[in-house]
Length: 77
Image (cartoon, rainbow, N blue to C red; front, top):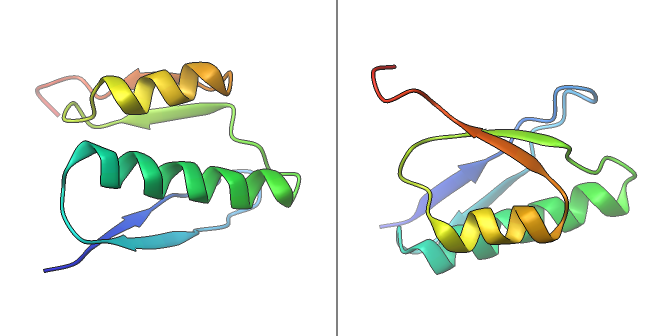
């Protein structure tokens, strides 16, 4: 089974996508970093993200290293 990571950039209305093989955090973090690199190379560096609660430490560590702020969706939504 394949999964699709979709990111929406509000300012440009771009929606870059990337497929990945499984839901392991390393796959998700790799997909996210590649999308961020693609956006950054187009002068669209992300500044803020809203994440689902299942995202974990490797992804948030990457965001911290890139100076991207984030917020988790409240659990009841």
